[in-house]
Image (cartoon, one colour):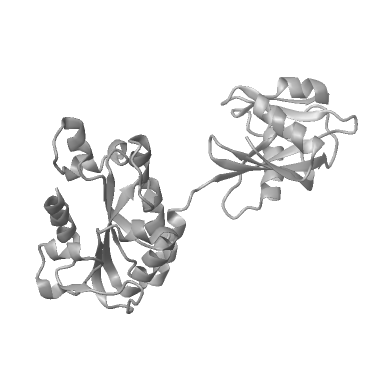
Length: 312
């Protein structure tokens, strides 16, 4: 098993250049001895190494300092240099009730995030031997062991990643791998009698308040104003931000603004009737009954405790 893992690591290392060895295990690597270099990981020299291989639990033993170590390696490696590391699988250890003996464990998502956030792009992520365990064999099948469903089904994780070629690539990788949220904006618009403006969403088949996705280069208040005019056919003046809601599905932030009609219009027609099947001014109590529960929650919180943020 170990030799098979080393074979995979060796195939991903650059053909030339010095390879940083973080532990004696690397003496078993199928590489010329003069390319291996045991060095103090706390005293790395910039732009010196073509690769770094840490398969002796260096990152697990580093504990809370593992991020610092990966960051230092990002500086010490040549542009495009390869980092290969093996870590303890926290998810597997917890499921199998196996103690980590003080070492830091990682899930597949956690080790990916740690190297991504420091600008490395992942080439290989696998759980060596996970597929073999299911078959009752001690074998390393790279293609099977890198399947998403098996990544947390083995005692260890192997990650092979490449350092950025230049600084702006590091920054781009960081932002590309961060969680992405949709952003939407909506309005709580009431007439002088206190009635709430509601619209019927044909696609989702429920009553809601005017709102939609914020376009590129558009501010949330501007989006709320635009969506209200498009969905309800009403020009409004945007007021205070009443609430921000984090929705789990889809993963998004919804900014809800206070709005007042520029000119009161009783009978309204949407600009996009293929999306909106009805527009109405409805007394607040009746509106809260008519609205979809998630939307009614937002309206209630905005009116009861304006200026707060909520999770739905």
